[in-house]
Length: 408
Ligand SMILES: *Cc1c(COP(=O)(O)O)cnc(C)c1O
Image (cartoon, rainbow, N blue to C red; front, side):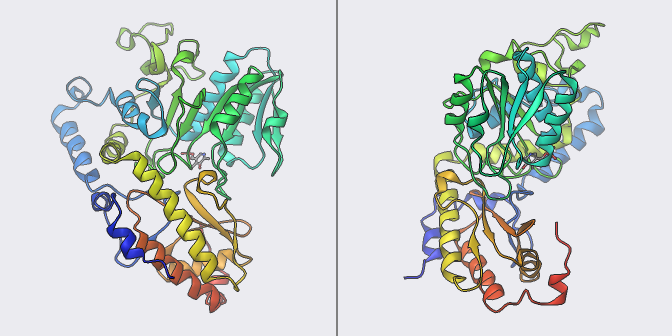
């Protein structure tokens, strides 16, 4: 029996949440949530409020408005989404900078240990941050798990940090955060996680998993907008022992004393480096306020179901057309997107765009569809499968303009 997508939408407890986001172009299905989530309708008024404050208050905004507290206030709003406690997250800087801060802090907490264990398939920026740190810490080397190799097998008493992306950015494979963190601990190592492809899509329990460090980005599933700040989360019991590798005046214990010597602020506040990005924070907060009204368990259950349905329906509708399923079939092993494989993936993504479906291509043969529990509807999955099936079954991708297309 064909899936009744409309009936699923009628029964969806989150259907009203979609109305809190700008719908985008009529008829276009946007499935690149993993690159940038949708725009909360309130984003515009939040920016306008900051612009008014800027015009009226100038420097008074720091004292009279809420600009200065934003990194920790937004962190506390984000905390429930990733299973962290209040007071564990500082919002600010890019994910790349936060990777550097988290891994640097972990290395400083494990002096004498000489290894960072990671995966060669990690997102490049994650690898670059580790490589830069290894150059700064004499004697520290990076040990890479090869594709398909279990990074646990590389962790031993020399390991300072097990440093991983929660979700593989090509296949969507999601690691068992609790099991890997526990494994790191049995060897005295710390766990450092990049949640960019899971936060806002999958259930995460950082406290329950006893994860030590986590970072992630604001603009993907969290819908914080272009240039949204990233975040760093450090388990409460480690914060006081962390000597920030990037020390700045905004993380000083008494920032307006202008003391010549650095004294770290208590707790996670010392991870704040410089002046907060006020406008970007205002937009991110608009998104976090949408999240606050959402039943998280229902959202993550819906996300799993959207992915299950997409994979099942795609497999059925494209069986004879050279499409393979590239991401785990079990929702509990998948991150924020689903991935399929096809030898002509790049041309198919270009053809999809022409047919009103925005997806993303990753070399050599992967097509990714990012799924948001907040604004995707089940009928969007139905429409996606219909358009994709036409393109692959009728070989509509086999045209020069698609075969030569440039995609991002
Ligand atoms: C998106 C993403 C980033 C982004 O890093 P920026 O510093 O925000 O550009 C980092 N790591 C992973 C795994 C990502 O998916």
